[in-house]
Length: 148
Image (cartoon, rainbow, N blue to C red; front, side, top):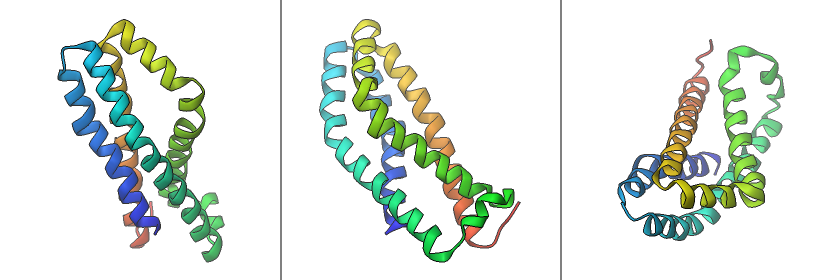
């Protein structure tokens, strides 16, 4: 369950980063760009929140049930730290910051500055996707016994 949800979650981030936002940036009509983003984001938000929540719950269950909390004290398991930090960042954004103010702030910036707001959103997504892929790669390597 944990791996399936990670695949859906990070796969969604990859789609948004490499396909959706670049396609939106190419739309010349600011109103159409914002409208399309709103429609697509609303459809995707539930899925993203659901799989991120299940990822976190199943991850904490795995750590608890296998008794590996001590790995957080050992920097050779830094991929676990990175996975947890990435999950916390996404959870904070999707469950707290976006509903409270980010969604409204982004829409205001997109209406004022057009494509520039989408370019900044794309840059943020590139950073988040890169860190997410590093965490996934580290988890795969770590599960196979690799340690720093």
